[in-house]
Length: 244
Image 1 (cartoon, rainbow, N blue to C red):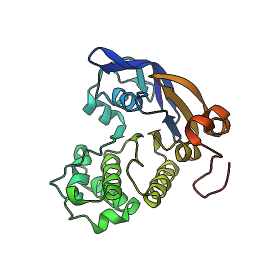
Image 2 (image 1 turned 60 degrees about the vertical axis):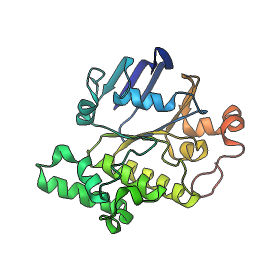
Image 3 (image 1 turned 45 degrees about the vertical axis):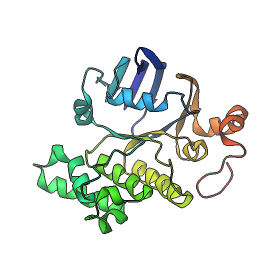
Image 4 (image 1 turned 90 degrees about the vertical axis):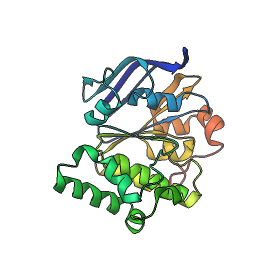
């Protein structure tokens, strides 16, 4: 579904990622792990078109590197940024409606999209009239994901969805990621919580100082002593608590 080849991008003439290549298959979860400052957020922003990049980006085998952000959204990309970037003064439902703005004339489809968002995130249905800026961290993350899904993405990119959330909320976030995969949405996940990310992903990439240093099936990476020592600090467990 997504093919990235030789991607380099950065800020003020300094590359934060260098010659990065990765693929995301339809219906799969791919995670990118690595230390702070490795370039993970820059990678997602480059794919989304938020920062200029050099290299090849293909979605559904079509080159999209020349498109602006709006064009990439129309092509099937969705991004939930690390800071969520909600419209704070607006209600929960207004945020969701803005996420589906392109489909506002497809009224039946728009209603189905809204109903799906509320079904995935029942808390948002209860909070639909609440001002977004007053939500808790977990509620804000759910709203950001719901808003992105209103754009009907074929590939959803998540930047640190567990950041700043309580453990129970983190577990719920990863359960929802699994549910989205089962529904057919491919996911590219950037996550500091390497333990949880590798437990749910099909494939993993390790990014260090802007370059891909390791890649492979997530189970193989989880069993690699170097990954365990650097990122896991012990045996990897899946979200149910069973050792892998």
